[in-house]
Image (cartoon, rainbow, N blue to C red; front, side):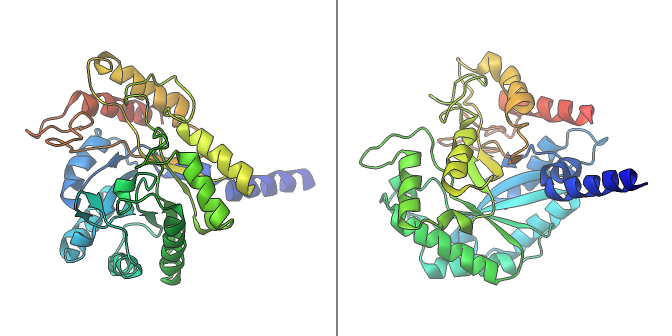
Amino acid sequence: MKKAWAIALSTIFLFLVLPTKVFASQGSILGIHILNPSEAFEAQKLLSPSSSTDDSHYITIPLTLNDLHKQDEWQKFLDFAKEKKLIPIVRLATRVENGVWIQPTKKNIVDEVTFLSSLNWPVDAHYVIVFNEVNHAGEWGGQIDPVSYTDTLKFASDWAKSEEKNYQILPAAMDLATPNTSSSREAFTYLEQMRQYNPNIFSYIDFWNSHSYPNPGFSAAATDTGKKSISGFVTELSYLKDKTGKEYRTFITETGWIDNAATDSSLNSYYQYAADHVWSDPRVVAVTPFVLQGDPGPFSGFTFINRSGQPTHQYAAYQNVIRSLAERK
């Protein structure tokens, strides 16, 4: 009898301390990155190709300062997300002026968090990303400034946590492929400058956030490894473990291949390999490839839906993987 009780207690303990198992049972890690709330319907069509599954899926979306007067639109988006079991990951953003994203003020952050707190969310956890790829000057007011970003991340985390809305804070993802130039900084150089300025900065986040793209040229094989590959998050998590002693779990909020002559015949196998051998890492909470609707524009090579509203090769390749994983359950 004592042995039976010991086994039962061990099972309960493992259930409590291994949150990855809970996430796995609740839905799929595979999601999509969209650019505005109106894309939710098309996102749900991509992510739920079969009515025989009832998985939840993650969906990354930016919130800009221009959205703050669109409360009705955002609430409809979140209501739809609740109905269709979509879990939002909201990335804070500002607005573009003179060709760059302006640096946020404290008021900007307060206004955006207040806006998000006024909405009814589909799930208890409020996943929020504090801005984007700040190791590019164009994403941070035309400057490379890890000190000011560190202060911004701490303030945003403190303010969101004060709302008592179960905000889960993710940092800005780094561009893992960029070098040190006058307008960019290598990712780990940037992160180390953040940590040297505030050794406790990573204690203000709940999860890591990664943009693990297949570089160079968004065209490398899925089997490649290292910081510039789709396995880039592994290098990031190792860095965090070394510097903080903590095992972080990560959201991969941007990834995916450009559709060109070099990748066209391989997209199906690349996505399948990634799902089976890379994104299956138990530390990965969600994967939201970029981007659902990026055509016309600079992201047309990544788009899952073209300017005519038709699915692209990206769409078919990714949906096949979603379908195959669902059928294995």
